[in-house]
Length: 115
Image (cartoon, rainbow, N blue to C red; front, side, top):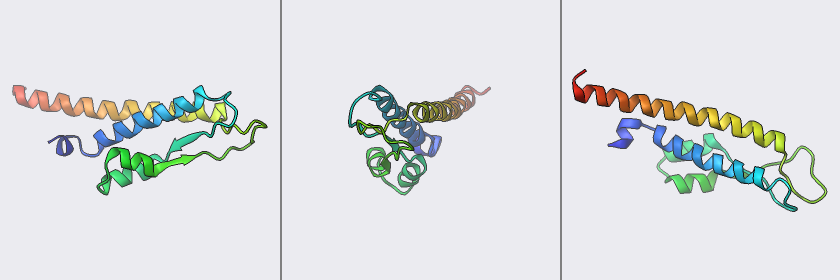
């Protein structure tokens, strides 16, 4: 029932949450020598879920290593300003998706109450 009630939004929320965790990991490892920054191609992951993949499978297939603009001498590919921008953009998308789901739940609740 949740698939028909929330559509793709439930999967989108799960993907955004996983992307938030990955970006947070990148930020936490900004000073770790040899650490390779990763990200989830959100559009590809969502398309994969829409095509029938599970959330974990879609995340795994859409995970990419970031290509740094300027490589550091210790091999770390985290560029903190880029990570902060990606984190902020993803947070806005997460809030928008959560708001959509909240509105849907409110609508169903009102209709069940007969308001």
